[in-house]
Image (cartoon, rainbow, N blue to C red; front, side, top):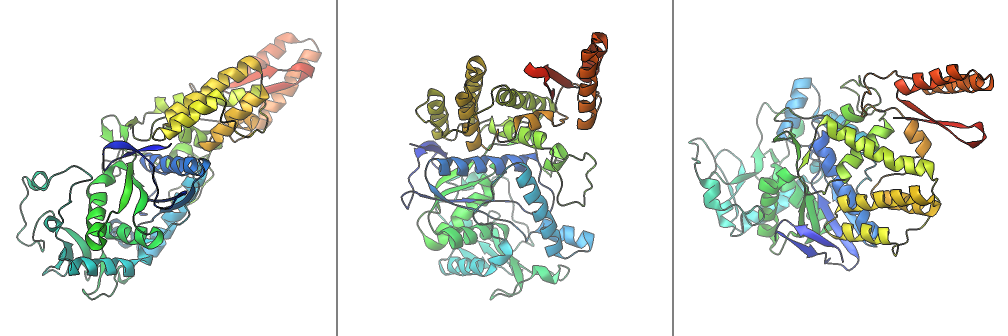
Length: 482
């Protein structure tokens, strides 16, 4: 049985769904005002693996991941660029989808946008007001009265007294308590008309937290089986979602709460606010000089799969460190798996779950999606295939890799693709495929003419350029980039 770590209970729990055989999963997605960075990649890939394993385990999955397309940062970007908000959000939604395709992230079943559900948000705010949990302030905002909700802090483990320590209510604030948060923001004259909606509270726009309460309920109903997101959403966003949804409708918002771990740069979390981020496209683009105004791009397939592997080989809840050396190590490890597929061409097989390595893979994944254990099972199969030359063994490795979104490329094509993430990649001669094949032909002619010194020199030249040759029976020479 699948057990999942529940942030709410702080323990692993068996997955028990409201509807037998069906998992309703909601994950908080992107605020689309800029390009996605590697921390976002970790969230996207982690929950992609979750939905893949749920489906592989026989569940019908209803996966919803929202898009925040109304936000202060979006408004600011639109004003700075002299654009409409919808132009900004459309551009960065397209950019996000290009990143997802590059990383083999399967699209969610639904991808609602906040601007499509403002009516649902206003309905929840009305119920909160009826239940004594929302109030209108003098500045025109509508705020949530945190101290009126008894369960506030149960997800994050933060007490109200701890949260309040050291805070002071600003004289001009419309809030009764500094802990209260905004549900509806009154419109400001300098803000674009596109960011304003009419309501019984006056013209304005929704606060950030209310959107997910509205969209998750509208698309999936309550309670959710799984609610997920990045590590920084636990508080205040998810805490506030609980307060809103349970305050309005009672019951429980979600049975299991999942949060992936942070991607660190040295001792700090990768984030836009700290400026220590690296975008997905800068990491895997086939064009290192990719212009910032290009929403879509051609990803380097070898580097893109390396980035997915870099994320997958760590447990989703672990603190993962980003450093160039870690990408180099991930590239090297993934290359070894592909070299096995190249050396032992795999048969197309159905997964035999009685095979010891498949059992180890399944046990790892059923233990809170332990992908590091699952990847270890792939390397066991790789070693076995290299020893035995069994096409069935390499086929099982490839089939299990597919469950993680890995090892589905043609091995020769993969190994012949260039990559920046290898030792000395920056100093190697950048041979094109055509140049490599021409030199291999030249070497073959030199060998036929028994000019072995010339043949050896060509091999050496290619080696210095990061190209490894392998002579096969029948005079065939295979090559790969190392």
